[in-house]
Length: 272
Ligand SMILES: [Zn+2]
Ligand SMILES: [Zn+2]
Image 1: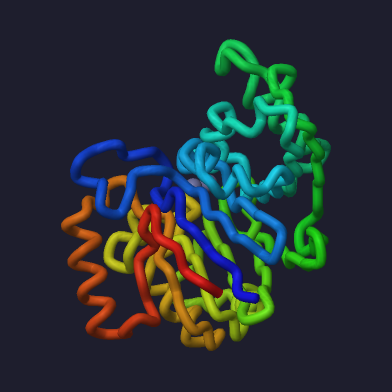
Image 2 (image 1 turned 45 degrees about the horizontal axis):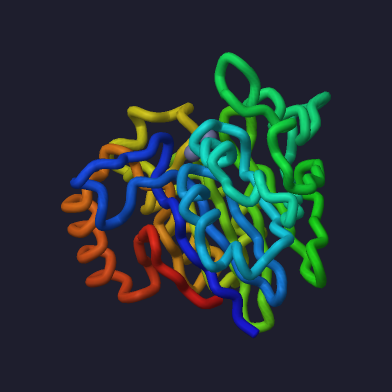
């Protein structure tokens, strides 16, 4: 059976609730993957709030939330995620915490006064916390999820998972080195059917943002070609990239690469 992948938030760094961002969407990172009976949630950005009110969540009482890292744009949806306040739900959190830290501790730090009116004590769901180390695999249901460390301030984790019909890699937030292929990443995404990749910048403006921990769509294309990836989705769009800009980019990419290189768009689904 194939996996249904849904984009609930595709924006990088900060939500953009503005008329110029509505076509591609203003919510930050959140992607669901329905893998057999299991529902995996990749990141808890502002897109998580809408996902928490969807039919998808009504059908799954056990949820698996995999965090790339704990920067605000990837966790800001958590206090607004309805299942956390419902005792009928069980939520498993997976993350690679910094040395000496726990996943539980990460969440507690975020949800404490004066930053938040709620704490983890407010939640009514049953919570489980799973910490892993760089490169360790996770077991969820009958599925093995591979992890890969990414180049980002404080670190970030890439995930690879497979359905009966294909494989998906979720690679955000990460920075490449100009002119140097990340061979470890190429091996990790090798021959995957679908790659979701941090495309916050482009090659022309990238040098102004070295050290910010992000990549470019051109590097995504280079990785796609080297790794033999079927379809590449540009993701973590810049909060400066208005719809007109992204539409023009999508047209250029379609002319050059057909449907093999596409822009992730909030509310859309693909099957892998
Ligand atoms: Zn981010
Ligand atoms: Zn980040």
